[in-house]
Image 1: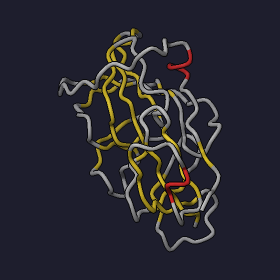
Image 2: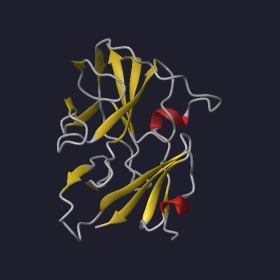
Image 3: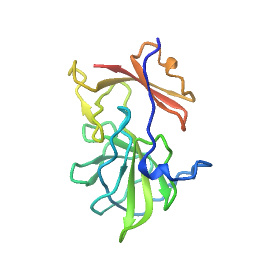
Image 4: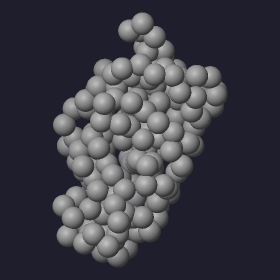
Length: 187
């Protein structure tokens, strides 16, 4: 069944970056000082944006999950838990962009100079539900039918950008650069 295709918009950080290659992920466990600003308005419900705000020090690794607070804070959270909204997919070196299809970029700065960036995707959990609010996705109780922007994750299809691979799902969120589709059903 074919449904609407939602594609990620480029982050503000990535708009001016070269498009020839993406650096390999960094797996360092060094402390990361992070900053955040409000992201640009998303062009899809996939919540793409760049972030920069008040500095904090937090040790995070690729594969861990975080919650971005409304006041610009970032906290570790157990992946799949009610507090986890994003999963760290890469740590990009200074002046290197995250993949253009990352849901959010959380910039690491030191005295105003870019040091690195956390590349974040929504913490998609098959069977779990999310409310896709621009700039602030939230876990949602799947019994909350009729929630505007509420979706249940049906499947994650790797090595494809074809939303038709989602089968019975209402739609899919396409990650074109990294070749996967998150298949969702509206609540």
